[in-house]
Amino acid sequence: MNACVKCQSEHLIKLNEMEDISFKNVTLPVYSEFSRCESCGDEFINKEQGCRNDLAFLEAKQKADEMMPPDL
Ligand SMILES: [Zn+2]
Image 1 (spheres, rainbow, N blue to C red):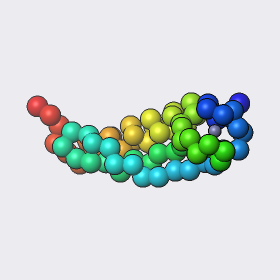
Image 2: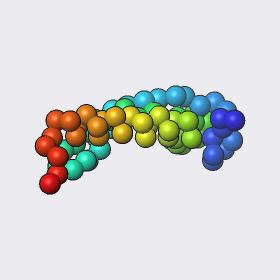
Image 3: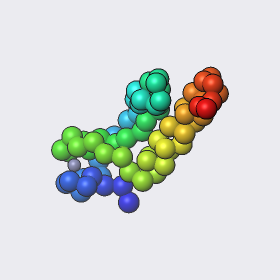
Image 4: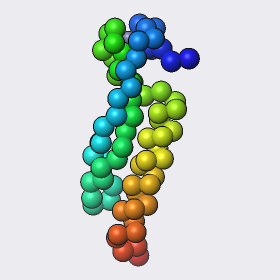
């Protein structure tokens, strides 16, 4: 089920953007997916998108860690 939490409309647009997320002393551009309701304009992240966003954030963190010396 994929419906707006506010108005229950099923007319959702899938969007994505690069979000800047602070991690340690750097800002990581992280791919982020979300949906926007065509009826009321509400924006939200469903479970599936949330999982993908978490993965994207993890990957970005790992890449950043590889470039940085480990914390000692
Ligand atoms: Zn809505």
